[in-house]
Amino acid sequence: MALGAFVIGYVVGNNGYLAFLAGFLGAGLLWLGMALFIDIATHSILTQKVNQLLPVNAFLMTVLISGLVGGFAALTGSLLKSEL
Image (cartoon, rainbow, N blue to C red; front, top):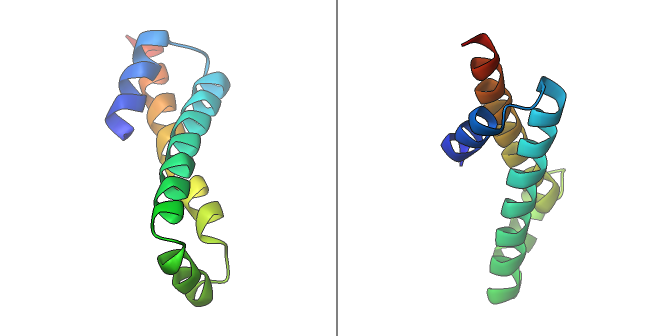
C-alpha cells in the first residue's frame, strides 16, 4: 500500500498538501471498504471483540492508521520528485 502511494505521489507530483490528502483519502477509504466487507462477511464477530478491548472504534483506527501511512508515502514521493 505504501509503495503504491509513493509511486502515485511521485508520478503525479502534486504539492505537499494535496499529495498527502490524496494518499490519506485513497488508503483510508480502501482499508475502510475492506474492513466493512470483512465485517459484513463475518457477521461482526471480530469487530465486537476488538471494540471491547480498545477505547477507539476499530473502523476509525483502521482509517487513521492506513490513511497516515498512505498520506506520508504519497507526500514522500511528491517531495522526492520536486527535489530531483
